[in-house]
Length: 85
Image: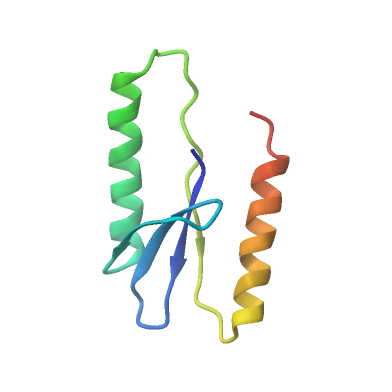
């Protein structure tokens, strides 16, 4: 699963799937990254060792306008889709 972290004006951070499903919101991006790393580690112990690990989630900083934010999200989605599995 590919995820990204959206940082908000109040410095909270939301961990989201690539299609925009909100998984959880945290106090900051560091906390969101730590939860993502822990989740990945737990998944590795449940899966076969040959399964590749998920990439680190991209942190999308807060932007001043919605259109700029939407552009960042679309660019992230496009980049993730182009990555080979």
